[in-house]
Length: 166
Image 1 (cartoon, rainbow, N blue to C red):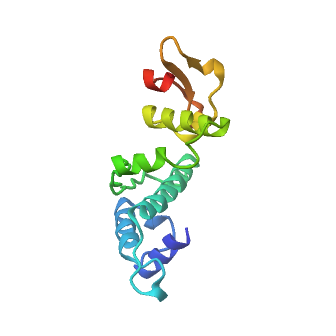
Image 2 (tube, rainbow, N blue to C red; image 1 turned 180 degrees about the vertical axis):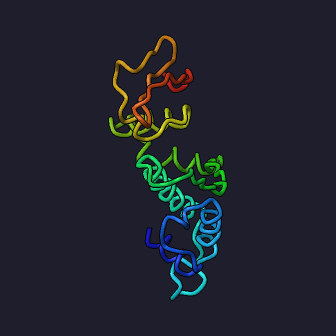
């Protein structure tokens, strides 16, 4: 809230409930995007995710004020669109380097386990923590399905290919 206080002061707005308006929130979002993160270092700009995070905090605070009936009308906080980032896909050469690494080659139990986990992750898109958390009862070899507990403790069924089963 220090940034919001600084914004109000620099923009000449009163530092009280009168400034809690839709127009002020829109101006604050623009100010966050344009104001350097560390003014002493020059023109470092906040990321869009950083702006988004500050606005989420302000929105939560405004909701609290509204629930406590300290605001006369609802204040809307507009969020900038976050870019969609696609995860990188390994090339054939990169996959070859992974499969021939010393951690996956050989006949040791550790190498076998590493190959199984990596193959499952590549085949299904499971996260590292999801694979590590799998129990024997989560694996249905007959139907090629896994019961996975993911983020938020949510369970889902995930199919896997015959090549991973072997």
